[in-house]
Length: 506
Figure: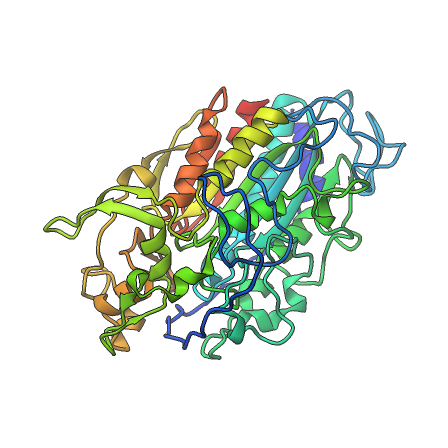
């Protein structure tokens, strides 16, 4: 058992010394917003009987079921991959072989294929969470090592990173030169080669250490994703862990109308270039794990005219007039009862037909198509706006059992500095109050935390992501959804939950 574990760790990890990391909390400043742009083609088939409206360009899964993948059997398999599914394993690889690291392969171990998509929020407030996720990549690889050792298998991994940025007409005027929204496409450039992305658009926040603390050299895979199996990987100048830690920090210049569900869907588009036959990221016989990291509400827009609709806007307290802000995402995407006399809302549910894509679009593709038609195992780890998790199960899948979503209270902002109120000290010092935060975000925070360096993380609830994630538990067996807090100081327990979901799927 321990010999197998050590072989895995030798292939995937390196000694990492994280320097003392300082990052001053971001101050959200209001930015002028441009008018919407019309004339984009509609996105069809939203799963709720609605259609189109102005929308985005780029690769689109235009149907919630999507075209089937030929020859798909799905799920975790112990068979060898089909020829041409990866470039990182040659014909000589197999039981007892020696890979590129010089480590012996796993003798007589059945193989399990797993494709993992990381959807990383790259808006201005996400520096600390990105750093925590990249740091936790080492824990993730260690969990994969334990899984291999405990279950006597050999993992065949594909690891892809994209962002929450699907573009938005209100963000386009502020995009730096050379920057394009990912729209679900893989990001394969090491963060040290794009350090300008770690300077906020207003120039007040410059935090290259988010990247450089975890990525010392320009290390990247030779494909749009990291691939590793046995003793082989596609990282010429380092390890799979090196490459993953260089890809996960995505910077601070992404659109603040985050669209993690839509970019996730586009990453899974079978017609996308990175999923084409020959060397696809997605493989017919692989299980699928989705890791979503964001501190805001999903704002995957079907109709961009909602950003021109005063009825969906909150009033700017400085002018008294309705103005476009991220509050539109909450107002268009969620319906609640209340608030009561304490400012608390109840029975909050994703809204259908309000200009955002219905969550049915994502539930149906993941469950009806990938699980139902293709027979895949699909699981999701959502690091979003819920209270901090205080306890996890000691049995697989090691899911949260105290704190987290069970303690979530949807409420208005409390007007006083944290911890007596909700306003972080740096914003309070600038005169930002609860009225300003309500204008900016629409709903109060699900969690607020400060680490030992005084860096704050604050996140609002994400009921649209919650609904899609929890729908995956319709699959047979143990949990396929793990909702953790983006405010947690350490994401290692979340990586353990991801490993646990995989383990119970075997």
